[in-house]
Length: 309
Image (cartoon, rainbow, N blue to C red; front, side):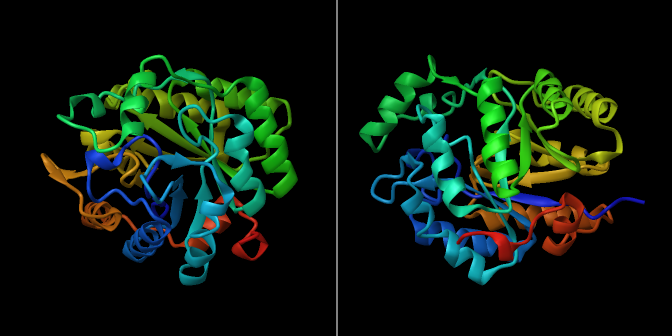
């Protein structure tokens, strides 16, 4: 019998820019409003980045995170999941500053260094609103998203062991699953696992059903019954690949970090629009939606009472 489907909503991310959509959450007020609405629509997990409220550029500043994290916690029981990926050009220390201060229930953890081609849609825009966006586009072709074995081990030790944080293991290709298996063999983390298959990013695995099946079967072979898995897919692939995931017994992630659209050529007006759409699809497939309480039990989270915000 299928378990209720865990819906994660990634509220703003660090790859899309204000020039791409007027609906992208920028300020702490935006992020609070969008997070609460997404949770009310059915998201059990909220994946959060921060942005400079003046111009929308990604920031790792803990002070900015703390302008919205406590407000979200007081208004919803959804699980807060903070990025450790940060944004292009950020050092590991910068990326860990907010999670170490906030000590959340969950953070993301990217499982390998990769070329991250998030620039492709940005390059098609006729104009860019901010100077930083032009610089962002210029560095994107030579930027490497760094997560070495040492970096991954550092995050696991400092957050996982040090703060009892549980991870959303973001795997952009099959090799990342073997990286995770290595870390488990090294006794740096204990199941259950929450693995996020990331599909459709240039530099990673494609958003195709055959590729998803290969990822799922490889993960099941490596991790057995201690595995909870989920899918996010970039851009136009978002809803189709999430539907495939749910039908295969997995979980789903939506949100404006992953796609700015709600349908062909139509910008999503909010994160909640995307959550409501995937809830409707899942409901019409007779699938239940997981509550935050169910997710805390399934992922062995420490509970909201143990965070520092």
